[in-house]
Amino acid sequence: MSASDNALSGRLSAALKAAGDVAYSWDFEADRLDWCGGSAPAGLEFAVKLTTGRDFVSRVHPDDLVHRQLALTSHFEGAGPFDCEYRLRDGDGAFVWVHERGQAESDAAGRPRVMLGLSARSVTARLSRPVSSGWRITTS
Image (cartoon, helix red, strand yellow):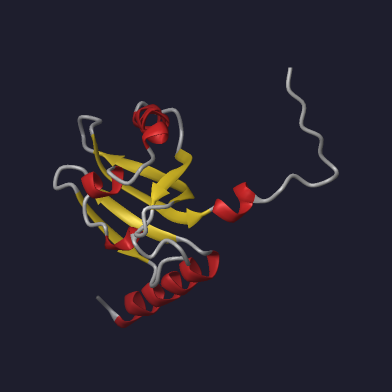
């Protein structure tokens, strides 16, 4: 890697850290996850220690597995970028909400081979805040 590549990589890692994101590359054939972005956001340090897609998926909340898989399948079929919120089991066994976004790269035959994305942004705080007094929730 050249000096300018190293400098760019350092700046991108700093930007990811400032945004509260961690980038990943998921090689489907090897089932390998590589993470980039320095330290993981608070509460999600466990995620960057997961080195395979199988390990990562094993931490998805059972009620969210189908939702995440449908979003991935839809993305693989060309319905646009992958964008999904779901719960992950943290290192202590509790669940945290995350927002994952990504884009698959396909081979010449159109089969997804690698997924590049931003993941492990915790949205637990946003989703657990009480509803503002300016909003009213009604049910029928």
